[in-house]
Image (tube, rainbow, N blue to C red; front, side):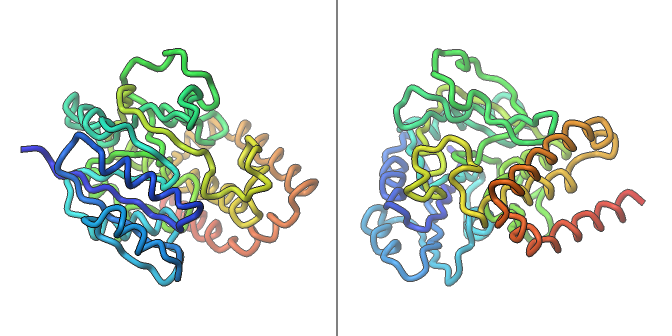
Length: 311
């Protein structure tokens, strides 16, 4: 008997992306699945449209925006599946995505995460074929922006999985959870997938890439404003609050997961990267500095917790 897969979809309803996403979920060849929608839209008609599109779905209506991290926590709490598929609402799945991604877990009992080949909507440009850590401790989407010429058609181990369409073993998520939470809700958006992947690696779990599991993604679809629709880099299309989250979350991830030796070994590239980010904020995005100041308590708490752990 096949394992139940719980598909979790947080959405704020922007541009009705979630409807096409749900339609792609409903056409999956893999069964059984359950669908859990986290309605972050606050007072819109998202729930009604979701029920019309996928009547069998469990819909949780939140009175505040839980964002991606908090939405995933609520969805996992409500789920019954042995495997959890976390989706961005601006994503479409090939009809065999779940079936092909699930094959990854048969290769090794310590594989706890699986990613497929994620393309842009033109179906020619790669969006992600898995996550890797750079020397400056940023999250690198392998293949990002490259034309798909079959260069990533070999399955194999990767460092982590992109949260665009990430399939997790529930046992792994339970083992690495922090208190009552699987995802760190302080992250809201950005780096929450790399934080989970890095935590899982520390516990001895592995991530695997399955190129036959295809998905299609509008990069930044729910985070972009219309004026930023053609911009490539996140720093150019994110508003100050979200750009602040991007910077804060990377720092939190490093403080939480990096070893003392790893921090020492990578201190120079980390410092140079942060210097460039600071220069960019001062010259072009001074409002982000205020966002980081408002969120300083998270970094202070994370630094204090790391210091106590080290001592």
